Structures are given as C-alpha cells and as structure tokens.
Length: 118
Image (tube, rainbow, N blue to C red):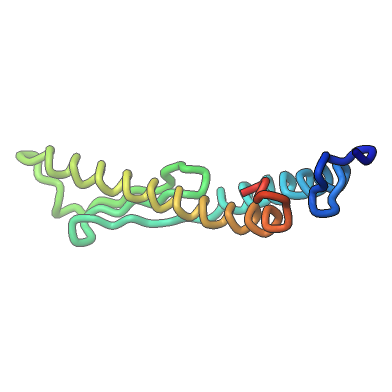
C-alpha cells in the first residue's frame, strides 16, 4: 500500500487530495447555506387569501392574510389555511436547499471514488 493511500487504488487519489477536496466542499457548503438563508420561497393557499414566505434557513419570514378571510365565526378555516401555507412554504424551502446543496456536493462528489460525497 502506498503511503497515505488506500489498498486497491482509489482512482489515483491519495488521502491528501481527498481531504483537500472535502475541505473545499465544506467551505462551499457553508457559503451556500449563507446564500440560501437570504433566498425565499412563497406558498399561497385558498385562492390567494393566505400567503407564507420562508427562507432557505427554514424560517418563516412573512405571513399575509386577506382581511376578507377573517371570519370570527370560522376561525378553524383560517387556522387550516395558515397551517397549510406554512407547511407548503417549509416544503418548498427544503426543496430549494436540497437542490442547491446537491449542486455543491454533486459537482465534487462526481470525481470521488464510489460517489463518496453524494
């Protein structure tokens, strides 16, 4: 076995190269997380009466409710609409994060033996 290497060969990569690539990927992922925290997605339900905005850090940053949907005799409907919009906004935010992170890990992981970073 070569010094710093793996038995059976690893596509010509030694441990130092693997570690450097992993460190580079980690730095890119941290940068991407910061960028995603600034990006938002919106979910609109009930024909536009409830709107929720979430960011890439899975935080709700805005909720809008049309005044005409506020019915003191039917609070449950409003609660259901808000809950639905919040869940959809968080789902969209998670999907955005997964897509963007895959760009970082996929690009670096593609050259790694066995898809090590996928």
